Image (cartoon, rainbow, N blue to C red):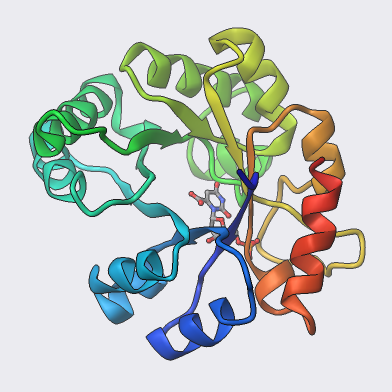
Length: 231
Ligand SMILES: O=C(O)c1cc(=O)[nH]c(=O)n1[C@@H]1O[C@H](COP(=O)(O)O)[C@@H](O)[C@H]1O
């Protein structure tokens, strides 16, 4: 199974289908808020029918009862991974898992992972704007331990925290890492970035790559290059 998850941050079904038609094999993709808000959840069936694996990235963050109800309705869409914000707390994350189990009704439920500190967050922003003191690493590890205590299957974090999370939460606790940039990429909104080969070295289970692939002149070639770095 591929360890590269391609973020389908598009605003129409046509763009998604054109993009996926370039690939002659099933890949792992991420459907997030941009695509879902444009096309609705129906886009999941379109992508599934093409044979791809899906991480549905809707980042639920609300009171426990609401998240439980939301997850109950996401459990049967046939996606492989769903997520919540760890900032919602342990009770909310437990409710997410409960909702998935109720919705799956005895069938295999999607994996549930928690977003720790977004990869667009720097130490300065976290300390000054968000009012969370200390190092980003400490906050990420705290969130990861909470996620594990709540029964989640893993977390979203930057490459720089993946190794410490595996040490704190175990090797089978998934680390899914966005903020991936090729050496040739320009700087943008991401702050805690790393290359695919460094992600591999750090033991990240999956990397999430959006613009480096989707905006590349030859997306399949760039995808294959990244996959090679993850071997
Ligand atoms: O949950 C995510 O997937 C996510 C969490 C995070 O901390 N940082 C982050 O970039 N992401 C997502 O990962 C993708 C990264 O896209 P690129 O920056 O274009 O590679 C986007 O779809 C983001 O929504």
